[in-house]
Image 1 (cartoon, rainbow, N blue to C red):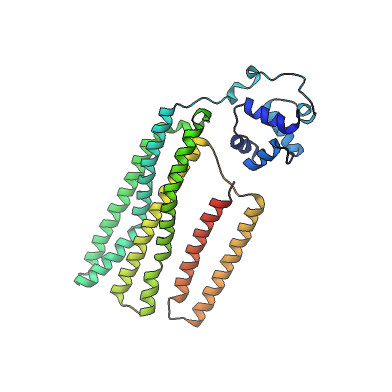
Image 2 (cartoon, rainbow, N blue to C red):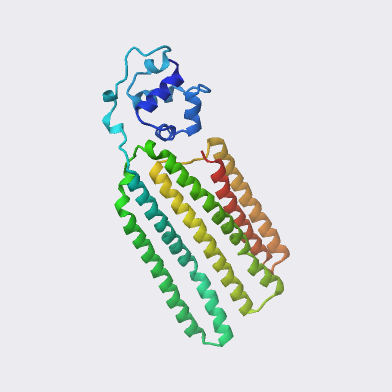
Length: 321
């Protein structure tokens, strides 16, 4: 028996998936797959870590041939044997997490909606010729109500999920429900893709109203309405993004799958981020010098920031392992 076969056999005997073993060894799932298919071999530090994890000697892992002893189930550390999770319990958790993901996303949206309330309040004050103090008090009251509602939604969602706290602390054997869980995650991703695209479009569109008003030299009313629309579009985009991210995290809590960028891509992302930031700052400074009385530079900075956020999300989503 070769090293890759031994690793695969020990992993299965311990009821580990490739993702679970990768997490324990602090490597990617692809690395574990390459070990087991003998496309690559672990270094000496990983060999020692594997021997400690599986409770075998390094000689057993490194020497070819059949093992001189048979690993028995009762010899495996009982603490490493994963308990099963009932289908009914999984369905209850997924239904509750879906509901609470929307509540938390709504809470995030209500908090981000506060600047929109302020902008629209100023627009109403200009149209109806209401005193600044009066409209400020009304706007402040609405902002407080919005924040209080968001806080209440967060507390309510936390209380709903409190009964599932044990899922974060303990791992479970999901082999019996793996196919069903995979179909649920696939269905979720198909629906959420539409939301992600819509949120991305709304994020880009949100910078258009201030640009249009600045180029047309609109008055205070036009500016207030434009920024109100901007914050409203951003609020909607954040709701869709947050709903997706919160629900995705609930699947990760259940499956204990964590994604990370490989070392080379992580370095490329960090260096690229610094280069991009310096480029944006440089162009912003140049535009500020040539157009000192225009908002072109500010709008360019907003656009550059939105593009960076969207690129970061999709880059990590596609490249993370």
